[in-house]
Image 1 (cartoon, helix red, strand yellow):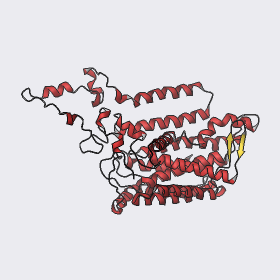
Image 2 (image 1 turned 90 degrees about the horizontal axis):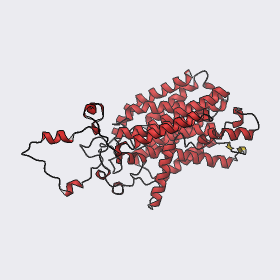
Image 3 (image 1 turned 30 degrees about the vertical axis):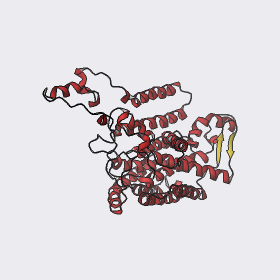
Image 4 (image 1 turned 120 degrees about the horizontal axis):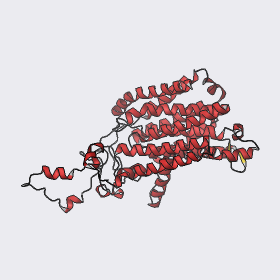
Length: 444
């Protein structure tokens, strides 16, 4: 564990220290696109944050290769080199997109090639645990297709959710933390060496995200861009592929009996990792909704719009920071809920805890929809949104100079995102104050 923590800290430190120089380089290189209609930031912000994250990944792998215990991961498996090869390719494509905004189909082809490079070096799914059947061995073509599909889905899910300051990095950090605990438990508790690469990948991924977050929290000084979002999505997918498709479920020996019975009992643990919908459930849901929404309108699935989950949170009245924290909450609830269920799936307390926390999450989600009446003595204890200010404003206006009534045109004037004077990324108020989503859409 000490060597994992050292690797994590080195990765975070290198990423953090390089992000500042990378920001200056991005400004000089002109990687500062103009603000689009779907953006929520108010000033042009440099991209290319993925450069610092990639060098953090390289530093983490280099340090782990020289540590006593983690050195065995490199000598016994080719997966770290496969990850580095695929990451370098996807990072290069992301850098070109951040600077020149290449076509979406070209990016999709690059993602598939990066996944194919990892498959050629041994990072692929070998078998699947199927309920009631057991471990089903996959042919070379089946394993390749499934691996490429998983990598592409994960990369685009993370890329789609990268719409608010600190959102993608924070959600992936939460997911990788839960994934690290699961992989470490499989490796140390059950002595399965095949889980060691996934544990290392998760630790390095946490370091990449933690090192970049101080520069990316609202208001962000730099964006990770596609070079960063596609990179962390690929690393996350590589860990899921490593531990799901190459660790034999029967090797856990959790249950007595046949391999079929063992697989049947461990399905709640392995299915979430097979299609990592629990560790990236929110990005995956956003990806599916975006594809359905755009296809229904006759648009390309890759056409950018303003209908993502984080955009909807801003529209119903949440501030920028609160929307990000709500997304963090749901990601942590799903990821760590699945982790707790994998440890003890028979505990009713885990289910009740998840249900209780879900109710709290729904309450926080709908908080802008109602404004409670707060007593005068409690005015200082609540946020300014819930304080009574109408009476104070009316008393401060002289009687001889009444407020001029707003014209009908002024009342219907929407408050656009990014207008100077608006608080943060959005104005807190009713839905009608925002631009109509159809008017705010724009394609790349």
